[in-house]
Image 1 (cartoon, helix red, strand yellow):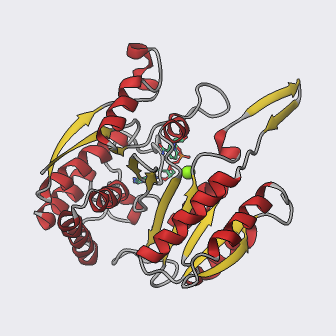
Image 2: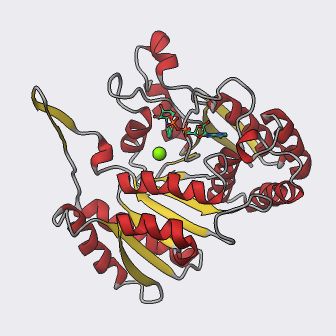
Image 3: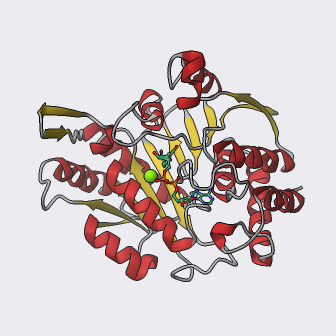
Length: 333
Ligand code: NAI
Ligand code: MG
């Protein structure tokens, strides 16, 4: 069967890692027809918008997309394309497995945790206004509907992947109503899953725990902003942003993308590490029911990292993106 997949290369290092990932997916033998669409600042001149309708239409038609990072201007300019995409397609669950690879010295041996981040609400939705000059307001909107469905997703995920514990990460001691609502929904959902151990961790303590002993954590379910911050922290534990994958999952559509951004500091230099997007593509292949192809790529990555010969500079090596990708394609084919 041929899968039609929307491919959004993105900007910065996006096209470099997207091209590499495309090659690896094709080397696995799976049949894919890519519908390439772009978004972000680069398309404004041609289309008049950062997120053309054709991008959303393509994803709605194919139900699956692989996406490179897209730059968001800081402090001014347009609203994040990434946030808009997640909201438009109601991709409510952002799943980010934080796992070490062989040949990369992790902070702790055997770290294997998963962050399930609510992906549509919270401060990250960017609902802001200037109340008066010198006074800005950011609105943290939290609904029981979204809290319940993200907690259900986390417990279902834990059940499916034979995980033992789901920890809700919150700050309900201070934000008693909004984070309190998440906690309340979590407790209700937890009752329906007696085989999974529920735990409650305050977000600052969670950050400390991740740095002191990340192996105590299993599945984390949390709000949008806390999940954003803790994912980069988690990436730092296992070798950095170059390797950590992610998926944005909705009831109908799914968009697979790495945790990292467009890395302007190394863009165009041919040294970006494509592993994070390749691992996101592995998640995508599992989602598409292409377990054999996913397994071939996973096995290739493990073997390549275990050999330790081809590493990009972010991991202390000197290989280019192409050299790494050539070696990986050989292992996968
Ligand atoms: P970043 O994740 O792009 O980069 C942080 C650091 O990690 C940089 O030193 C970069 O070189 C390194 N890095 C990231 N990915 C790497 C890779 N694959 N290989 C090697 N090194 C890698 O974060 P930053 O600089 O804060 O954000 C840059 C832009 O990306 C911003 O405009 C931000 O809004 C956007 N962004 C987009 C995301 C998305 O499209 N989903 C996610 C995160 C940020
Ligand atoms: Mg982030």
